[in-house]
Picture 1: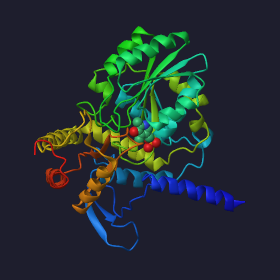
Picture 2: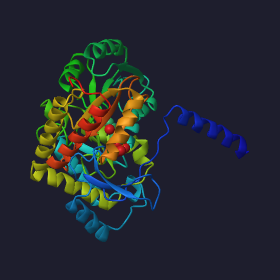
Picture 3: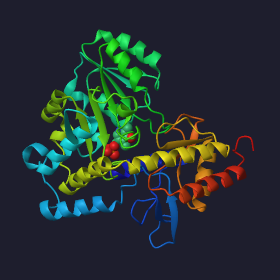
Amino acid sequence: MYQDFQKHLQSTLNEIKEAGLYKNERVIVSPQTAAIQVQSDNVQGTKEQEVINFCANNYLGLADNAELIQAAKDRMDKRGYGMASVRFICGTQDTHKELERVISDFFGTEDTILYAACFDANGGLFEPLLTEEDAIISDALNHASIIDGVRLCKAVRYRYANGDMADLEEQLKKAQAQRFRIIATDGVFSMDGNVCPLDKIYELAQKYNALVMVDESHSAGVVGKTGHGVTELYNMRGKVEIITGTLGKAFGGSVGGFTTGRKEIIDLLRQRSRPYLFSNSIPPMIAAAGIKTFEILTRSNELQDRLHENTAYFVARMKAAGFDIKPTQSAICAVMLYDAKLSQVFAAELQKEGIYVTGFYYPVVPKGQARIRVQVSAAHTREQLDKCIAAFTKIGTKLAVLKNK
Ligand SMILES: *Cc1c(COP(=O)(O)O)cnc(C)c1O
């Protein structure tokens, strides 16, 4: 039986390879931080190379933070390794409740529910809240987990072009046919680094009687003067009904997701959200490190300030060097190269210079929109940023992609 299926799989894998879309995992043999050790050709025992990492979601540099590691160790000693249960049977410790409280305080919301990942938070969000009588109006560039969450729900789906408020208004007019409406958007779109126009979305939501859901995965910890996300940027704290987010990016870079917002919404999710009801509780050590993360971020604005300084510095220098940079309001800097092959060659050349980045091309971004996505971190030193800019300029000159040069 397996032989036929194996042939089928092999031919699918070959198609992926021939299309140049096959993904190889690149192996790191050090903690996740600004300077990392990688296996140069992904084979154990081969030469290791030190590179400066510009492709992690480690925006605040907390992924190897000593305080978080200590908080996790201490809680593991006190409360053990795992919960061996979903939350509602016997998987809830005081640690989980405290983390939920801390997240609500951070976002200025009424209540919070934890998930194993934000993928689960989004996957389990819509189905319990809406029926076929209702509508979801979703930004075309929303994260895969929102798209999947929408698919799992019976509500009528509407899609609007990325950040296009005229289109959103059109869709909202059509959606008046339904009972309730939720507008769903990413806070920061991960391929360009642009923020959603939350002020205008909210205005339209008021006008057309809709709720607003924002996924703050790439924006919380990053956007806003004190890193409280797009609701801070637009001075809209407490206004949005539903916020989802992850502990896997700025907030420590480990695992865990959450939905935070209106009390009744969170309460119903605890009763009906399937990834919450049927998937294991996060380990106490992860929850404890999560609590410590928010303590660090409320204690001082040092990491946010450094991230904002680093990003402004990097983007300004790259533009001055002649690179074509997508407008960004986050720590994501998309260096446009347009050509898919060029983006791969450029990224490989950069790795030889000790700069670790990823080139993205179709289908991750639209055809003819290939780019290298640089993610700036508070962990980067000025010297590391300068090395990156110098390497980009060297390869950019060699491959003749600089403007006005
Ligand atoms: C990364 C990301 C997720 C998934 O978060 P996990 O906690 O890793 O599952 C969801 N939504 C958006 C917008 C993201 O960028």
